[in-house]
Image (tube, rainbow, N blue to C red; front, side, top):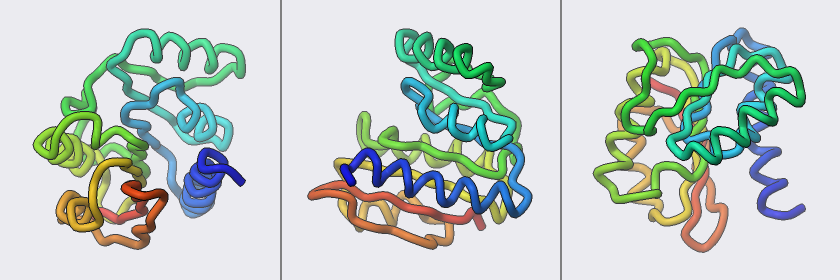
Length: 161
């Protein structure tokens, strides 16, 4: 299994489990071409996805159109999410937090905390932070899993307090 397949399996297990236990609304922050958003749509989540790169967003929308998906794609930066507080059961931000600096990552996590319902799940991955940096970023979350996914790569599943 390659790194991408392993990442997909990691996300799918959590998404499937949460959906089976009542999760209804999901948000894919920095969705890129939409791979996670499109999968979440196939397992009956109400999915919103954000991306600030118009080219990637167009590709994601095209993918949704091909699978007759109902994903609500929004052009928005990850540190300024256009959603109400406490609106999502599941938020994923895969390789988004480390696109700029730590201040940006903190702003993104703050926005995720704002839109995620208490007790619900945030899953993410980074490729340029240390274990200690990830733990600081996830302050205010109960970390269920934090695992190394490469030399400087980490992925996690955490529950909002």
